[in-house]
Length: 188
Image (cartoon, rainbow, N blue to C red; front, side, top):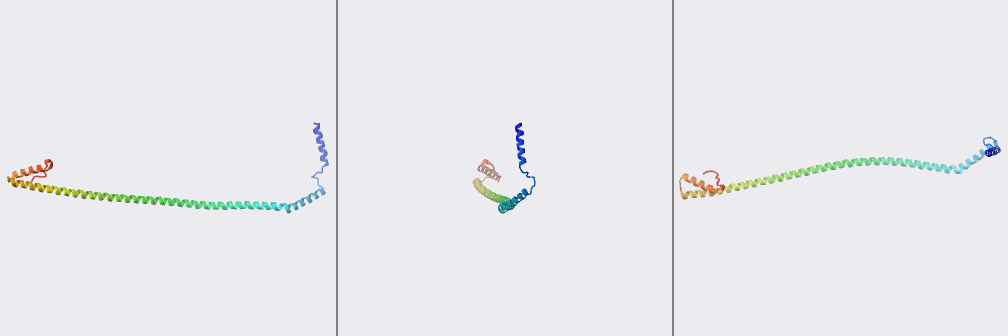
């Protein structure tokens, strides 16, 4: 501990020999003021203009960046609004196209149904005509057969010249042999 005490006393002796900054003396204050004013003159002549110029340039760059960001944000907002309106228009157009497609499909369907109905009616009409023609042919065929049968029966009657009851019996037998299955249409 003695060493520490010795060092503290040496240091206290040196502090007494140094001038005190807080002691106001005219010579020290005068030279401090002269040095300060000289330094301010030198700094204001050569150091402050570049520093202030750099600060002003930096401030201008920052302001320009802020203005550019604001302008970009406004342009982006305008473009976003335009894009949204284009998207809305595209949706409306898509809905119109879908509606038109549905209408066209419905029209094609209706046309096909109408065409199919017309073809069906034509087929039915042709079938009816064919049936009617076949019916007429069958009736004509039956008439011809009936005429031939009547002529044949008359010839047979003329040959035999029998009585009226016998004539009827003979015609009935002839018709029974002439018709398939032996069914008669009626007695003559």
